[in-house]
Amino acid sequence: DSPLGYTILGPVENIQSITQEHLREYVKENYLAERIVVAAAGPVDHGELVRNSEELFSHFRSGDGKRKEEKPAFYGAELLYRSQEEGSLAHFAVGYEGVPWTHPDSLTFMVIQSIIGNYKKNEGLVPAKLSSNRLTNSVANLGPGAESFSAFNTCYKDTGLFGFYGESDEATLDGYLDELLFAVSNLAFSVTEEEVERGKRQL
Image (cartoon, rainbow, N blue to C red; front, side, top):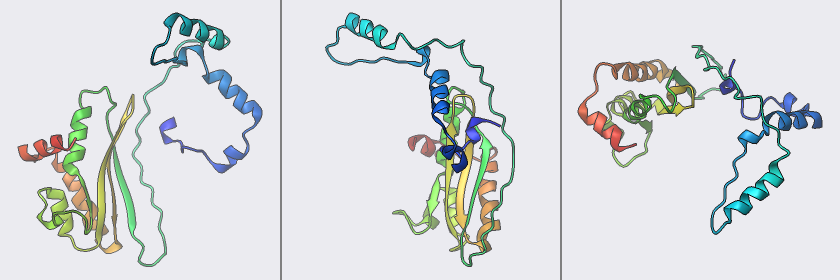
């Protein structure tokens, strides 16, 4: 229901059906005078720059005012795609509604992302089982089936997305997801000063 949910390129059938008229209409509706920025650097004569800009860009029409944009609605959902390939890994993502860049809590979400951190099996200078990151330590002790996880936090101008990605084998999946979900919910009750300071340093 929002452009945030659209694919970057769009479906193949849409791309193949684009016509010259579609492109002309897009330029007409979106290439407007108030959306043009003319920038110059170096020994430039400002008056000459203004005159040239007026001459070259005066044919661009003005819009009908600022477009009304509603805040995208966040809807919880579950999407499952199962592979029959033997030995394949489970790839999963869990997302929550975040905050926009201008929100007072945007830095808080960045620190939370750092506290959750990321993990990849058999990588890193310090063995994961000895990590000071509680979640990394717990995941490493689940066994060899937990492959990786990574927290994400993306801020847009009017909303945000926060959560984590992960990979594991099928046998470990349930316990792995429980561990990750517990770590996120536990942030509301049990965060140490050391974890907060470590998260801030990593920003």
